[in-house]
Image 1 (cartoon, rainbow, N blue to C red):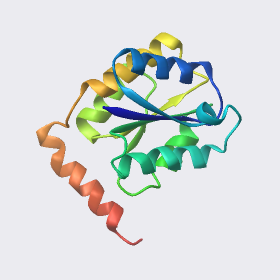
Image 2: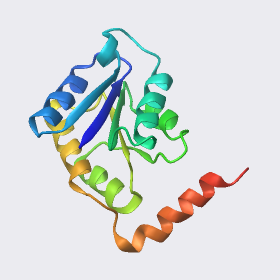
Image 3: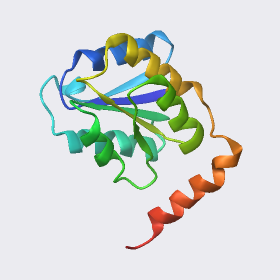
Image 4: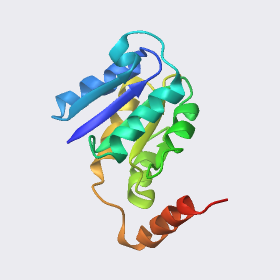
Length: 148
């Protein structure tokens, strides 16, 4: 399984996430500051991660900025992306289980190393959404198609 990890800065927690994913056998594609080593615009980082996921190059994405909010909003502008800002493991598990989230957003400011590992593990532990939620997930896709 391949995970795109993007960050607008070289936050320590982003490096922890990458190393943790690699230690669990995931292939990781580094995007943004993690690749360039310098500050990158968070909308562009989020868009690139989201694009890699919707194109099928990566199975999931993780986006990180100072609060996690900006990258979450930006990633969700890409059709087919369901990015969830998750401050804890249970929220991450629910994001996959009930919302079929395909991009995890994290706050570099609030997420400790151990918490980041727990959140990523929980997010990736759910391989498919709960059956009763599939209709709600389809409704979201229809809303995405609506011209408002």
